[in-house]
Length: 576
Image (cartoon, rainbow, N blue to C red; front, side, top):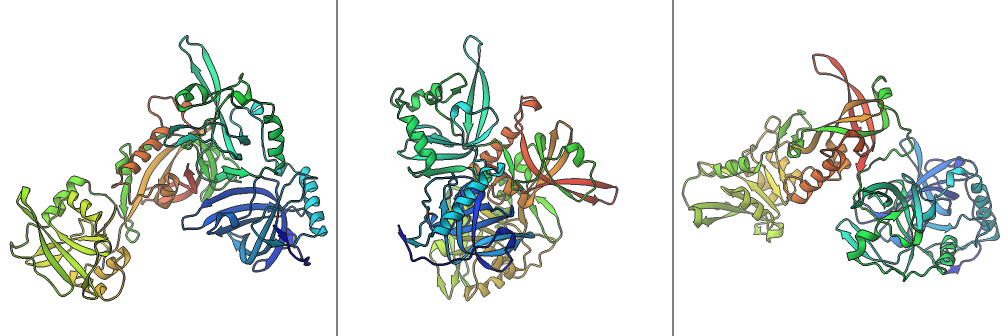
């Protein structure tokens, strides 16, 4: 690491920032998320900082290289950002990186060496910078806001959330979603959840132990970070570990059932934390909202937004496959998704009116017959051309007459896009009771009320230009696409009352982190949804044993033509 020539920089206080400016800042970390993979190819990092003005600023950074993001290890770390752009989002300032952005991060402990963490090969750090870092360290010592809750195992109490610094010494695989690793690194596990469990042994004697759960996702800054050996907390841990023989009790997966329980009476280093990746806790993205009792929610006049802590008493529909519907955003209609048996009847019925003649080619497609000898049946496939040429299967759009549901599934694994067609007196036509397009695991349907179907010949316009995606195909054929949505009615309950809340559309996909458009065709996703709902609303247990959920709900007013009523809907909530 090199230090560049001294250069005078001007630093802006957080209460003086303005939208549209590019500034240099110092601040203390109030909240952060460990870098995580975004929906695209980049990594994302979020940090909220404060300074002596008591103003705060949330910053979001993206980078294709995780190592270039600010190396923040703890609440209370000191950060220096150069060339950060101030924007505004939801009436609050937001910091993002601009050209030339750079970051230095320092430990927040007063008196600690001012050794910056940075990926920059050159940077300036003057005596004046050192004074700013030290002044922020001293200022934050008296602020409860920057407590990072790093605890020793012996100090942990049930239902606490805390950060744990440890040196892992064992490896064991519990199942696909739960495992422990042995590394040569010191790590901090952010936002661990301590939960007390009671069990009975063979003699019916009760035994209590703590389980540590690292819930999934990145909310509340949860995650695992590797710490450098010059970190002050690591150095303190090393001093303790030198007095402990870590080889006394080697751990193997066969012995895990007796080692993964941390008894409250056991010495802290003779136990093993269980890191459970599958969580039953629902967490709001509105992290700073206070919790409102349901009795208060139902008394307030809509529209309002709340954060609530509730249990799920019951959900409808009980048959989870019925929770996925096809929704038209134009006419607001909802319809059931056809099941496999009905699709089979529709797809094979599309061939009954076809004349028994050789397949006819057209200038924009080439046709072949697929003989299904076992059933004395024929499937006709029309291969669409692009610039008068047939495409490789992975890029092909084909039209299929008379295939079964399983045959369409098989073809969809080989070809990019499939359009089910029927023929009427040798003319190809669409039937909107079937999907108008099949792409992999997604079967696209059109609204029969809002679509203005055009001749199948309209597809020929895509053979010269345009894209073979669902939007372009629907536009060419005059189809109003339907959207897959979850539609569920949840009865939520707390100590003060209960209410019914809808969970649907984008909010439901965010909640489950499952695509409604794929769940019908992917067994693993169906099982995942079943596990989630069974965990949140476990059969055979009393409501007092159900897990708590932190949710965001909003109220709104509705009049269905008969009577006015207040309705509720879950939003900005996800399950990890």
